[in-house]
Length: 185
Image 1 (cartoon, rainbow, N blue to C red):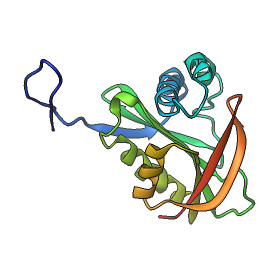
Image 2 (spheres, one colour; image 1 turned 180 degrees about the horizontal axis):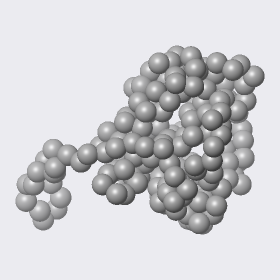
Image 3 (tube, helix red, strand yellow; image 1 turned 135 degrees about the horizontal axis):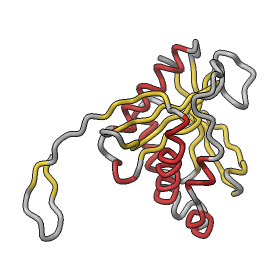
């Protein structure tokens, strides 16, 4: 890939090797940093600026439960570029359904500095694989209304809106969301 920036010469960027693994308790602060930076960039104009500016990784990190031995509970995968976490995805059983064959992509975020590098796709493939391993044959996810970047990403991965909307409190803020659905694998 060739990139140009003002005042720079052509330079060739070396593709990075990204690996995906289950999150560990020691990852909490780094994942929280990705979470906060991603929200602050992706949800600007969709959620109040005051709220986004006040987000702190320490608060998010305290809520994570990585590494707990819940074989049926949520599982978080992290994407690493070298030793640094640059994205994460969380999967589990669908929160709002009684159908045991319905999984849910609960979260998928990539650090904004790494957007457009294929990391989200790598996480998505790993998340779908894990959902399938847990015997889910379909999955849902929720997208904040107006998040066009996320909608394009999910549609490219064959997720489709199913007509269901909800208003929920997300980290102390009311938000409107649209549900997407996909067959697995």
